[in-house]
Image (cartoon, rainbow, N blue to C red; front, side, top):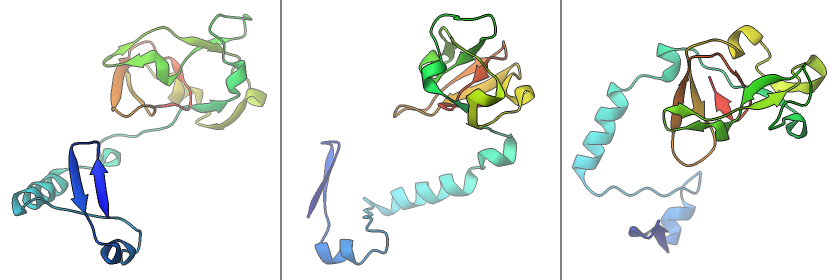
Length: 143
């Protein structure tokens, strides 16, 4: 079978080889240099958890997240769409009360920490920004 990767390269993998793989994955290496580089990168890398602590944002009722402040109880929150490459654009509003929180991080001290790096979970590219204000982040972001 032929496997086309983003119309840039086509790999041919036999059905027997594909079905023989426990996870039905395929792998293809172009050269020993590629393997050497991959191994070097993996050995030289650190896990994110080794150099910092991370958390996901709160999980709330998406229908209650509003573009404009609807009540004085609502606080400013960020969603993934507010985070661009190295910048934060705009915010949303949410009534952050226990009955509106379904999961994720509930610790306000963590969520509202100033000068945290926020990383967007959504989209195909890794996009992050510095949050100097201490916005509360929802589930589509890591802090």
